[in-house]
Image 1 (cartoon, rainbow, N blue to C red):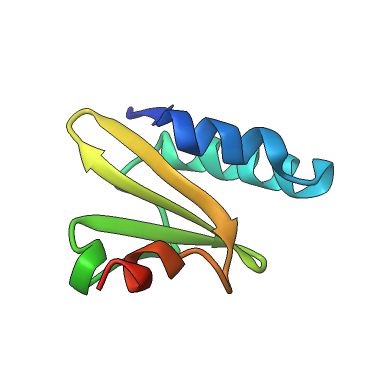
Image 2: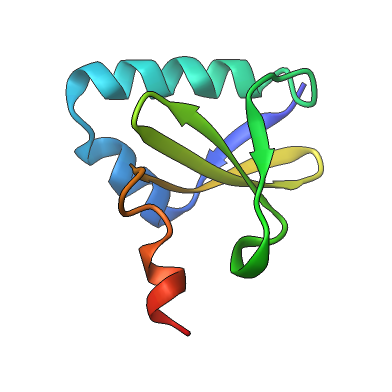
Length: 89
């Protein structure tokens, strides 16, 4: 069973979510504790290599696996979740 930890940025983004989305994301955190038996996970490429994402409607939870923990680094709307990586190019 994996622990789900949040980076400071991930925790701030979680706190700022609308209440309905926050409840759905909390449910995803519970699912992620069953790692690696979690469906719907997509491993990312390019600048986000080594990270994975799981969808929560139009929102994305981006995390990395550092045994035995999953570390959530970002929780954002799909249109802005990868923007910082693009702007660093």
